[in-house]
Length: 254
Image (spheres, rainbow, N blue to C red):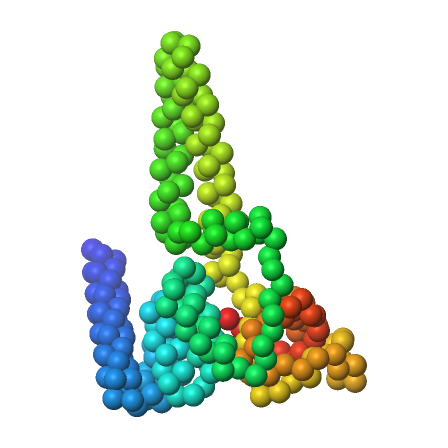
């Protein structure tokens, strides 16, 4: 009986704490929106950052924070948060437009190497649905495939057996592709393989050594792909395919 009372007490405390945290988040979000609408962008930024520090994450949160940084003329910070939002909502046209606007204001104009057609198609497939929608879709495919397999086993009619077998085989193939896409989408969401340069101007080195040769220069706001790490150095690749080394302190991961 005593253990039951303790369990009830713990559950009550957790419920109250969760409810209070939710109220705090809603209050901060309202304060941030009010500050943004009255052009108090630094105050809005502070409120949005508090919400993120508390462990909250969403497309809208990063999008609004990016807008506040952009209005505050902090382009690198704006781009970082827009890119974080884009990871969650990869097909959002407003985000893509905002990223293009910020990129037009940056010093570096890096031409992107065209992707191979099959990589483009696979990326479109992976980003077609959110991770939750993709999970539901995969469950539906598997369920239908199992039903067709059951029909194949239970029915003696040759035509029905052939149809159910090949339809089930096709759905299982789609399910396998869906699982692979969901796995890759989840990996992309939970990994940090891209970053934004946060130093006004930085020399990119040929090797992870301060005394190595300078091979090109990057400016604040440039997006880079992360490759390898050696001590305090990060190997990067930019959109045109050039590769070099930069200090980890000069970038912020997306």
